[in-house]
Length: 230
Image (cartoon, rainbow, N blue to C red):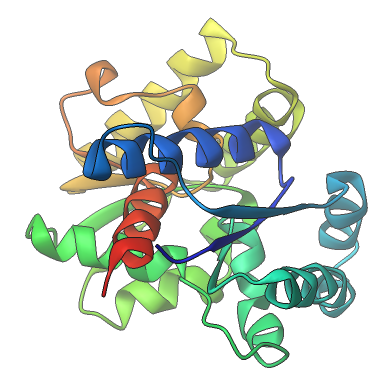
């Protein structure tokens, strides 16, 4: 079994889900008392979020690269960045590593293709929804990406940072998200990417009648597969 490096803490609420899902996946595959070989580097998210807000992406990339190099030195065979937004600096981090980064968008694209999705709605932080680093990766694979209107983008983003990252699950916020999903569906989305690792804490498949692509779950499933590959 390969050792998985988790670059987490962004937020720690969703990093808990990563640890749980990966271990559940390994146990399901191997049975017995098997669990995953995991190394975790957990950053102070306040420091990273401040960089995001100030547009200091290169600085945030250096912070994460230092943690990533530590995970590689400790014996990680590959790395997961446990957040969608900070994949913006994945190329910067990868340049300083010899081990591969298992990209969250690539794992999601594989799942979209398996399901035959050609037009998908994207929810996430305002950075993930509005900037090209994530969307273009999907669009380049022939899949059209829809995002909410400007007001809804701000609403979705606020819930992520002010509630979900703090472990707060609000019924009113859930209804707001469901309304956004309904709008994207009305615009022709065949599925919805939960493109922030916290959104799965608020919205589950049972809540909607359109396929959801929870990037946390997808990333973890891909990690288990890679960890057990020959």
